[in-house]
Image (cartoon, rainbow over all chains, first blue to last red; front, side, top):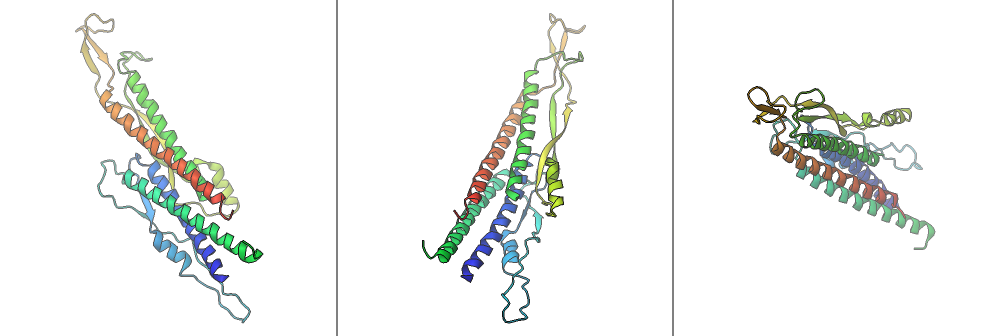
Length: 131
Length: 151
């Protein structure tokens, strides 16, 4: 049962980060022709790691306390992308790269949404005792 | 709420790109307009894009987010047309002595519109528009999937 809980937490965190990354990639696509715009992104694996693995945790001072967890979503480290080729107007968006990352991120989002739904259905099965 | 701002971002880009397309259409339509409203030949126009912070796309968003203590989204931004500039390139002169607008030497001044430049610009604008329309489509699918979680 706890493992289903863990799954739901992890998928939730992943969805949140994917949504945030989707926004950044959409900004990059929107600003593909804006002079001086610098493409942004963040390291998804590192951000997810920070949000789920390195939990701050709560101290269990009594035997009846449940183990707490305090993953943080606040600390997404947004960085500028290093372009393969510089543009004369100072714009660093490479549209083909951004579009492929956008599509990839969208698929990953859909996969996590599917897994999260499955975990919730699993939980419901456990509660009601019938599929 | 992150997913909803995708529509704002892509929407701002589509607005900006269609404004760019209108400017190009205006330039191409006036490629031979030897007089405009001010009596001078038409000057080629270009839009200038500028990054626009997400909360400025929809001011109500900032107020709503501030009221319930939501953190402002960072990093993501839309785009807008900052201004429209007129080209300073020299006008095209054509020798047409019979033309009513010909000067003493028989030269008629035509606009400084470069049709080749406009056509390439048009293709770039329409591609950019398509990419952003695709972003809107994808975002719609993602939101739909989000609504179906746990069903």
